[in-house]
Amino acid sequence: MLAVPFLALTFAAFFRASLKWPELIPQARRSILKSRVGLREHLKVYRLALKKVDANDRARVLRCLREQNNVRDLVSCGSECQQLTELPVAVHKPVEELFAFAFGLLTKLGIRDRNYKAIYDSAEYHVCPFCGCEYFDAPVGPGGRTQSEDRRISEALDHYLPKSLYPFAAANLQNLSPMGGRCNAYKLDRDVLRDATGKRRRAFFPYANRVVSISLSPSIPFAGTDGVTPDWKIDFRPDSPECVTWDDLFNFQNRLKQDVLDSSFERWLKDFAAWFRTEYGSPPITHAKIKAALDKYAKNEAIKGLNGRDFLRALVFRMLHRHCVSKDSRLIKFLKDILTLSIPP
Image (cartoon, rainbow, N blue to C red; front, top):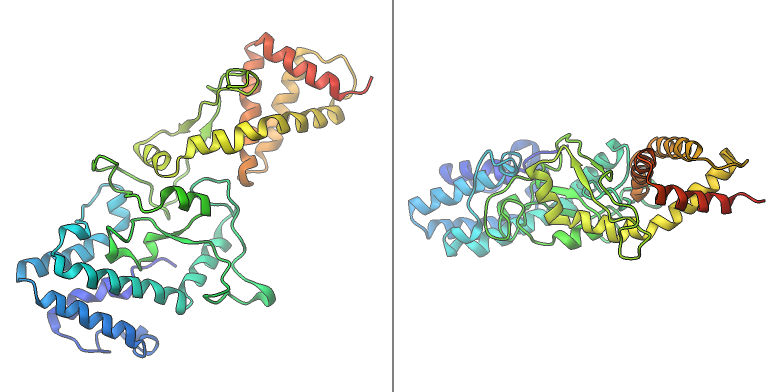
């Protein structure tokens, strides 16, 4: 499913051996690509630009081509690469235009749709992997057909390493990950490999099987700005430098607090009260009963997994249960009042 595109694999050999069109294209792809005259013309322009620079600079460009496509090692700080601005000015525009054209071919050849479908079909939860809150649409439209360029409903493929800085990876599927619209809007063209000061940093590889959970246990009830909502504290487990980058790129913690936790807390308490009425309908409402109900409700919600933003509901009630176990008298009274109102006299 994921592969470095033919461009990144063959360009170095192309310029060393002076291969001509369409012989420079691997045999397995030749029948599909030899008619793409636009690609041929962009390759010519790129080749002429390389001829204008000296041998050392030419070697530097070709090395950069290989290095920028080593996405997995780059995000783990296992390797380094130069940015486009560090290369000779003569190659900037030809590189950008060639690989922008190659990225467009991923759509025209149906590669983007097939890649998205493979990802969607293999995922247990159809949500944005960068926030867990935005739902992904199914990859096919009416009649079961894969969507064409003008009617595709697949999510945007984000250039994880921004193409303005790392254009050689612009058509590399390992550098293209489906991403929800809001995450895409937060990340924009920001550099994954370096922070705002230019310091090198580690980031998650989008296609690695890494699991990071979060906890709301340190949150403080009634400490929010309205005096009712908790002051939310989000812990990453395990915490890591990659989590710092993740939070910085996608404004993850602030978005969860403002867009989900603050806005949903009251509704989730009402849902809990309605559930409590069916499970524990008869009075009295004791501390022990509240603790048992919170524990059971949190476990029931956790079973639902990463079902959109409601996955945070289980974490909220685990946090409330923890504070009730520690005999937070104000919280116990608050919950008791809510649950009492939910049970008819």
